[in-house]
Amino acid sequence: MTLNARLRPLDRGDHFEDPLLELLEEKVKELDVTGGGTQLDANREPANCDIDLAFSDDPARTLRLVIETLEKLGAPVGSTARLGGGDEAVPFGSTEGIGVYLNGTDLPDEVYQNSDVNELIDRLGDSLGDRGSMYSYWEGPTETALYFYGPSADEMKRLMADVLGTHPLAQRCRVVGLTS
Image (cartoon, rainbow, N blue to C red; front, side, top):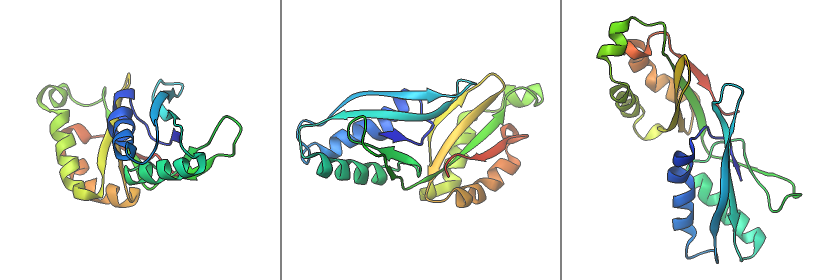
């Protein structure tokens, strides 16, 4: 499985691997995560991630169950699954993503000293309600990215606009669509 999600390895486990195993424990024989990885771009920012699975059940049925479960867990549009190394990739996904990139170098020193990124994350989460949530983050040399996924990227941008327009740490941030 390749998830079109920007996730750190621990977040991949928390959001997808562990719940997948738990939800399919009774439905798929000997289902196990045998590997995974995070593809990094040139800046060492996550681009997507993989989950490798092993099982002893009917392959077509298991693939269908895994895809359905990953979509329920919020796998982003643009994700793909395949059986074996040579089979054609099956596209899937149910959410869209946005990245909120916080400027880490160009704001006044007092903003960094007097602001708490966790408070900003909480306010963004509150503004989204059940229309999205933060899956992961990335700390780069000049900015920090917060990765949010939900049913609609445009709706998440709209719901977050007030917080991003008023919070000191959101000054000079950029909001980027992550899924297509």
